[in-house]
Image (cartoon, rainbow, N blue to C red):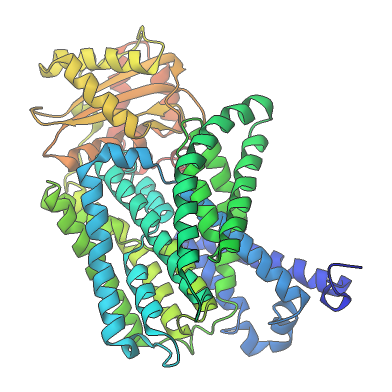
Length: 582
């Protein structure tokens, strides 16, 4: 006796339609995503537009038979497509979870918690209050329940998009900066709390008219278990997998299997499978044994295969022209920006940051991107929100993602760009270091910096090591940018070491760092730290320039190469994307 009825099985024609539909979605989404990137727009914008082209907005209007054949609303092909889409969104949440480093949140301390708490509470209160008092303003279905709807709107206004924020910070060369790490740490807490809250909202929907308490209890117990025992187990199992399997297949298999099993568990509990996949990513991603290179490989695999198909699928079920309501879009956009930026700004000010840094933190946290779109899609599938509100959420997510980077750049960049050579003298270049480990090279760099600044070498080393523990400062292409901000530092100090063999700084591409730049800046000058990071990445990120510096005969020749490169004009200092963004 078969498990699948003959009427539900994929025929040869159905299988062909399924494969062609996935091929079209993936191909067009990749093409349009790359076009969006070329014009400096979020890649997800192009991927969603691919679905709009193939969905009811365009294809169904001009060639309805082709649309119905490729993307039927029911039947075996529709079931297979939906299964693939659900697998894609689960893996996307796995990637988001892998970005969460709980230990770095604790190391950030007061600032991260202050920004994350206010960044959740302010937009949640505004969103919940608006949805509760004026639900019709957000296009609520009169037949739907008010409390789950209001809870969802509050969560949708308060959640952030960790992968999108990480990408924006990398593009602006801010990812390794103190401001970048604060934004990342606060966003980690936002994601964790936001998805837990959404899971509980989904639990209430699945138990309409019943007792929701057991589902909530199981959810909380599962979350606590996976973040404690699960983290401990992952940290013990990963070294065994790495030692007895081929890289990267063994680790990737372990991560994906764990995500699928955890997703199945949360689906069985009564909430969506994505929550289990997200928590699996948090538990595994927090392990010290998961190398940045492995993390990046998993990220590239999922975001280049599953993500484009999922985001393109968003345009398949909604007519974006018919469902566009200008008033709802405007309300959602204003509430999302004011609530998030304002809340995070206040949290950053209370944590002691300057006003410019606080505003930059607020705009950095306002990027919603892919996570907000996933949240809206799941709510729409659960019939919690209307198509009009869903379209408004998609537009808000894209608009905030496009606004975030330029605003951070405007708030934190200095108007007059200086040169890296302006911060260097020959004695600040160590061409033949004696160190062979990460800590010893940082000690050697700190000792040289102490000679230049007059500050105690031990104090400099402690500050740099503390920053290194939050997140390794290794970059692709054999670079590392250890840095710290010091209260009593009179002016910025740069010390560069050129290592013949390289030092392991846990870079995304796995290469040891051969050019190691220690950047020390005064605490009250966050923009100077960002300026130095940007200069180092733009110059040393060029393979030809990097090779010349690695072959310089002495410090004078090293400085001469820098002077020649920086005097040639800004067009020659555009970093290779493969080396900087990998």
